[in-house]
Image 1: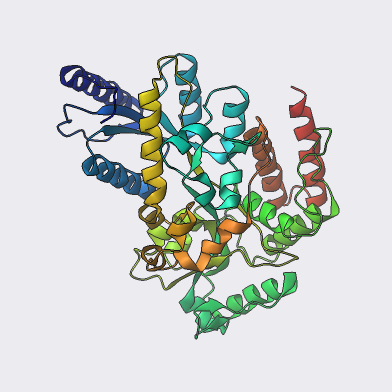
Image 2 (image 1 turned 120 degrees about the horizontal axis):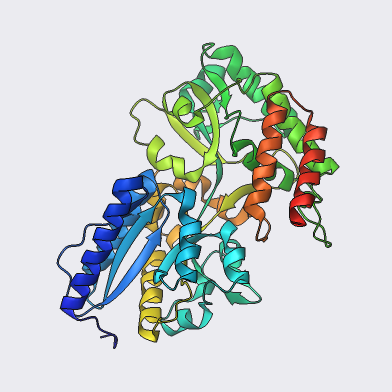
Length: 435
């Protein structure tokens, strides 16, 4: 039994206060949601847990939290889910004002600012204390949370870019291997372009060979994936901290993507590529793994999914990870810290449940388990975890990505060339670095 205890009356008042507070916030802005709290056990360590999930992700996470609470008596987790739009600003504010949760989800891309500012604790020692062997996690995923040989979070998954496809449309075009259910794509840029051209020739005119929005981040994800597939590709900053992505490899990847738009193999002005694919109006879609849980529910969609095709020298695809981190708190006790890590250990050991949302679990033995491999589609792209390429570790990385998004959008709408897009993005990134 854990040493730290919350009295029954105090705990009930605390949970009630939390519920009232976030119900009020939710009523005003619809930004937060606290899970329903049943009768709380009289002896338990209460953990406040913050998450930024939406849609199906939140449903699966809530189910896992509820199962954890049912399975043991020493810890009780109260989950508060918020919209991603302002999640990190709220989390930073909570940490600085000494109102941080006991444990929180942090994306790998957002970790640098939390690590460098001292906002989260190292978990190396406490993980060992509770019997969590971090070496059992996929090394590529685990290393994304390590700084100066210390682990700063327990990664729960990777959610990488994958290629979804409608088997019916590929079948009509003669580019589906019926024996394996996988797409038939010849090597290189020309092979992938020919693959889409065959689809366009075979499907109705209102079906997109490939769907991708003309705005937002999707084209940046695909560019980063293809750029990292090339020998000598993948550089974002040089040793002096200046932008280094205006180079022949980056230009080749961006020129190829722009060509798909120019030839309307990706039709113009697509706003909701997810819906287009879900409704059967697109043959191919590049999106993160989180789409799997929704797409597989469609009774009309003949779904297939694979890792990002290798068009160049090696496999690579953009990805990120949800990680369980312990925010710095002035009143954080050893018992709470231990409880947070026990919860984290349980979460990664039950990763097959989180995989239902579409993600690849971080724990190797879970991915190798029969339970995981019985899930349809997941084993088709589980290998992506070994080839995920994360964004560089920089405190301003999200701002830099937003620069790329804006410049790529101008290119897609024909307002500048790929060369100009990279040149302009390079100048803006370097200017932002000096601010």
